[in-house]
Length: 145
Image (cartoon, rainbow, N blue to C red; front, side, top):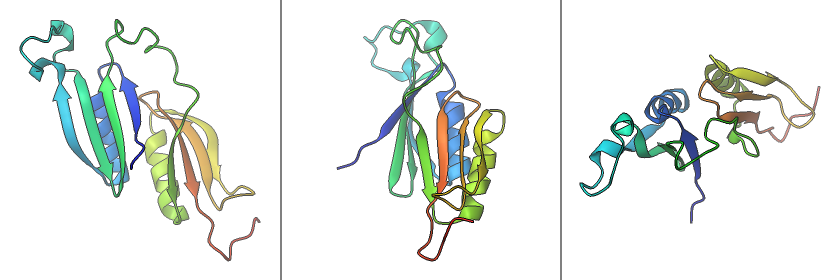
């Protein structure tokens, strides 16, 4: 069994998934535009290049995504809330690298720094409007500074 988060975009799904693949070292394994759907599927021409389905594998984890026309997702233009995509690693240097890359062009909520639970943690909303948390998993010998 696998639980996968599906992210919604407004015409930026391909760009976002290519960015996430680069930052996270993953691979986009599916990217199906609306324009390549079944012949009997009505598609507004302005959405033909938008992705109706995208899949990104990162190690044994995955993200799913799609571009959502406003007629199917009336609140798509509103800020995302109630969830974060979370990246965990035992390597604080890697966590900081990922945090800085995902932050580029976005908005930092909590700068990456040691906390009482982690040698390095930060939160942000990336340039695509997706909220993220980046967390370093403490080793057995770690203690808060």
